[in-house]
Amino acid sequence: MSLNPNRSRIYDGDGDILMEDQKLHERLVILPNTKSEPNAMKNQKIRLLWGQNLLDDLLSGRYHSLVCAVNTEDNSHGIIAQLAHLLPTSQWDAQSITEYASWFAHRESLSVIKFDMDAVEVLGLLRPKNHEHLTLSDLRYGFRFVSEMIKQKPIRRPVASVSFLGAKANKLIDIDNPNSEPSFETVLRIMHESGFSGDVYPSPWMWQSAPTAVYPTYPFPDSLDDMRMGGS
Image (tube, rainbow, N blue to C red; front, top):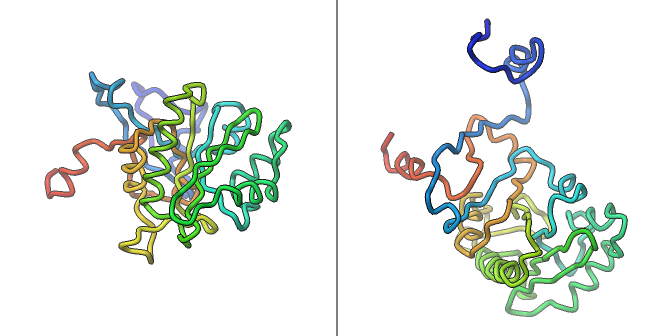
């Protein structure tokens, strides 16, 4: 297949043609976000960092804050413990994170716990004691609180968040359909409606979404709703 001589190349040499032939296991189809909005500052969007490694970006100093889930049983496999282990000036570890979270557990309400790891402040969402799993209502309450914390202390920006999907110890459920996780769109809607406008990192397993196309920001364009209603 010959290249269009008027098209800018992505790679040096024959890289463009070679990459067309790749049968990649992890593959994304990202749609361009070309529409500019005059009220962009008023209606801030959530950026979706498809294909990017959150831990690498945290360790390189791209973010001041991270939003994730914590629990009172075992945090050793979560990103918070990995971050605590890899940050050279952090005084936290999986055990101390879990013990500290236990002090803030409430029976009926979610708690947002601050973990100062020097280079990064982690805002941990701790589900209520009477919830076996994190619910969408918990998530909404947590992100309203987180958004207010960021508003009151802007130095917490730039801020990143996990997607809360695909977790084991901190599984997210919809109580109306507890046997399956909510969609990524539902999670993003709750975050955005709660006032959050940071970056969200889709879980690595979501990088295999092709051929389903994905958008780089949320809210998604109106054209998606038009298609769902039978339009083109």
